[in-house]
Amino acid sequence: MSFSADPRIHVVGEADDGDLALKLLRLLRPDVALLDEDMPSFGGAAIARVIRSELPGTRVVVMTRSQSGGRG
Image 1 (cartoon, rainbow, N blue to C red):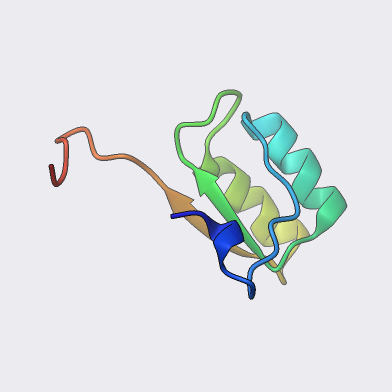
Image 2: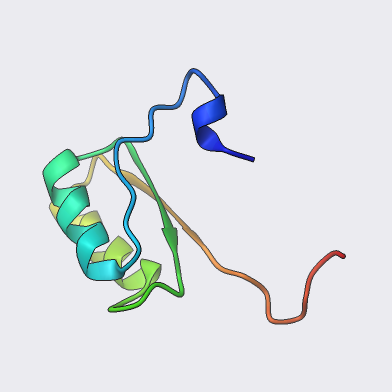
């Protein structure tokens, strides 16, 4: 499901690695950051720790894929 399909959600940035994600978060200061735990550079949990101290108003959701395969 695409977040851009919901008119209440405005996607303000996308990043394919942790370094760029952190730079964009600092610049854009979004209300919510949806992060992948397995991003190159450093993962979502590490970014969440930084954002927690630097941008306390930004809520963070860290997602990961299960290695078990999940539902088919």
